[in-house]
Length: 577
Image (tube, rainbow, N blue to C red; front, side, top):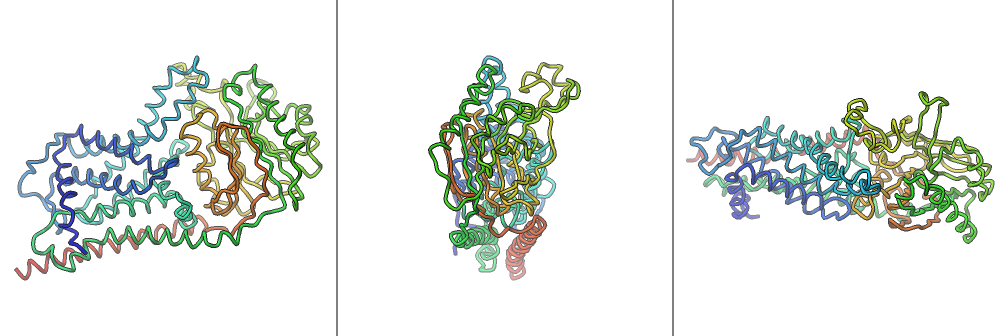
């Protein structure tokens, strides 16, 4: 094995150049690096790019945190003379904050550009706000990475353990992003380890936030091996072994996750069983303009009804099934379904006695305007039009379904961003909805499926159902990202996931996250399949956190041992001298 301290002269030269960059160039480089990280996520999944992304991130933090330190394998030591090559004029705290923010802004700007498409649905009202939204949200989310970079200043040793510091800080801000201010765990660093399906199986061992920690250990490990040579001691065999410890940790963890995933998927063929429940999923492909304009709502509702009727007339029931579930997407019915019994009876007359219709629609409760509540809901109807089950969306979209801080934002004219005055009301957290002739399911409407915390307890459910409407975002990366993050819930729980979008990506995934059936976005279509059966459920949430702690402890031991071996080699050389 080549000497870890001298085998990469070009990388060492690059690290040295980073120290000489002014702050503006550091920020530009960080923004580009953040944009590159978006390519490692859905829909492209070029996850090997993460090795380069984490290397540059690590070395930029090195360049700032070691400005007043001497690079030494002995640990942190005050420099005997100022670093004349260093041209940064800002304080390290300011520099780290700005570089971290720039990285986050570049990442979220490229990752979330598709949000702007929703402002063009009603362009005459909202087009002028699109640039503001496309820039402001990435700017705010970038503060999380600014905090992560800033925190490294308080403990960034000139040893291999600094990648553990990076692991903890990035894990902490990803967890915080998933929870603070209602949470937004969209495209976390851990998502880079969720494709292909082999790596996706890691979610049965640790949760998504734990996968962020794994990702940093894996992708930052090789970069931590690039360090300046330290004289004759760098040629000892002991120091060679110690210096490669981060790389060995990285490759071992990646190989372990890959091997585990391959082993788990090898058993998937034997576990591809189905239930006696037939699923008939109707993707109407109604344009978002037709859904938001009141004069077009009748035609939009009629389209999904006609597509269902024609499908039922042409297709026979699948053999061996006892129950059929006809499923429509989010807000397929653009009216208050709980208050229109005649409409319920009309749309369910095509059903047979053991059939049910599951559809998204509005729900209105309360008689007076002051007490009226409108919810984005899901209804289960029998063939008589009776409501046998329902669910009111719990996790609403800020600015899309409700207005945060309404008194303040109303005063500056932002009420128009909400689709109805006052916005939607929210319901209780997702819980199993019982069906008379089929297993109970846990419902999720739109983007609340991206939150891992809502699937922590699934013992009373046989499948997951996600009704969505990604028609707001057209043919952009948004629907692909949304579908992939929804897919992960099936792996985490071992339950099949049925996902149906009005205009997006509709698919059925088994408990391994493998695709059983799929419909692409922006086209009407039908899927008719049997509901996949439950497979062996993964570790509990408590056991997943325990697994994360175990891996982190082992990582600290490996990194500490590697550093001690390196330090002992230097000490022995000095003693002999």
